[in-house]
Image (cartoon, rainbow, N blue to C red; front, side):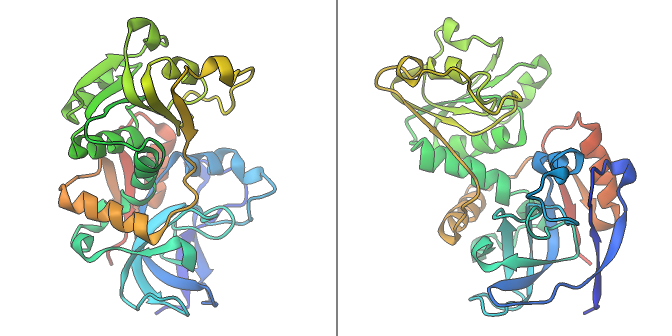
Length: 326
């Protein structure tokens, strides 16, 4: 094993055009952390936010290697319960913000955010495994922990034409739910139908006025449409606010007494607390139902900056994945 590794490290705002790979010392293993050879990384909008704005916030460790998730093989398990060579995934908990993330050949990972991939999923390709951790964990937690989704539910996904939306459709349809997917862009209607959504609705911003009702609503646009989504709930229904696609982070002037319909419930999902049990459930479910994560394009690690360029350009659907199988 080399004493150095290649990684993308940033200290200030870094569009793809200014991104450069660095040669960094291999991380030194310490108690409570394990060294992982990164084999795949799923790219996320939060990393775009980091490169274009958030990097200047005081709570970001600088310089930092981005990447809030990844998959790979344990090189040195340190004092963890894992074994050398074991396939693992890692996500969240400050990864790529407080401590170096997965845009690197190796990553030193906190033990409580490092999880063994169950045996039934280990045969999946690295690209498939890399597309699962953060996206499917957020979808899974929103659907089951927060919405308490059951097979007889009708699930409306507000803002379904995003990576998280597609994953939620796949999980809900595999469970047997009826799924209503909404999008404000007509060009995504057929794509959502191809994911087996039972109904696709063009969202003009006032869905409640159309009489649309669901027992469960996954709100991915966020506070911008949340009041309207609450009024799409059937009596006894639950709405989970998970996304911020609408660009609004808070709901000013919201009156919960009047804004939440009687007999309905509002919750939200924060994806910072994964566990081995939940990750086992997710990978096993994906493998058992032969779910193929929606990957827009896969890049090898040598072309990581090309992946950043596509992320900056936008216009793609699905998840960008970077793999390193050398």
